[in-house]
Image (cartoon, rainbow, N blue to C red; front, side):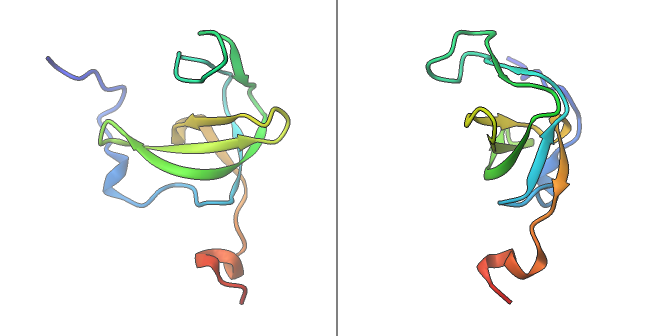
Amino acid sequence: MKISRDSDVVELDGPPAFEYGEKVRSLKNIRNDGTFPGKEIGEPLCKKGEEGYVVSIGTFLQQFYIYGVEFISSGYRVGMKRKELELVEAVPERFRDGGLA
């Protein structure tokens, strides 16, 4: 059985595009694909332009980073790919690696 991939790019060959705590914006409407508990399949989880913060970074299919984004307006934590997000505000350098320089 062949795995269907939506890209030949293997993001895991490099570092994640976003870091914990960075503010990001959704580039598209995201609906429940059946993995979000308590919501029907197809129900909206976030709207295009909605902003939130990266709270987790995982992987999918040994190819993509998946960013857990906590959206401010809904409070939902949604897993999203790099191509679905854009950076709004980076974490200041002094807070990286847990330091308070």
